[in-house]
Length: 93
Image 1: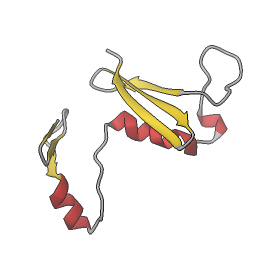
Image 2 (image 1 turned 30 degrees about the vertical axis):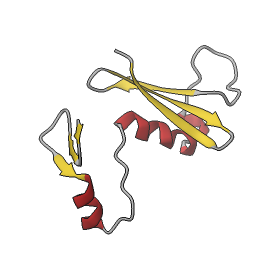
Image 3 (image 1 turned 90 degrees about the vertical axis):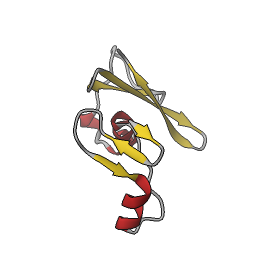
C-alpha cells in the first residue's frame, strides 16, 4: 500500500519512505513498482528455455503475460511498443 511517501508491504511488517530510502542509498531516482511489474520487466532478459508459450504455436513477438500466485492471482502484461516495452499491471482475481 502506498500512502504519500510511505510504502507498506501488504503481507509483512515492512514499510519505508521512498525519499528516505532514495537519500540513504544515494540514488538519484527510486521507483516503487508492484512485484509482478518487476517480474514482467525482467522477462526480456530470460533465456528462451525459461519462458513457456501458452496455447501452442510459435511466439511472434506480441504481448507477454506474466501470471502467478501472490496475494491473489497476480497478472502483468509486457506490451511491445516502438519506444520499448511497457508494462500493464493487473489483478487476475
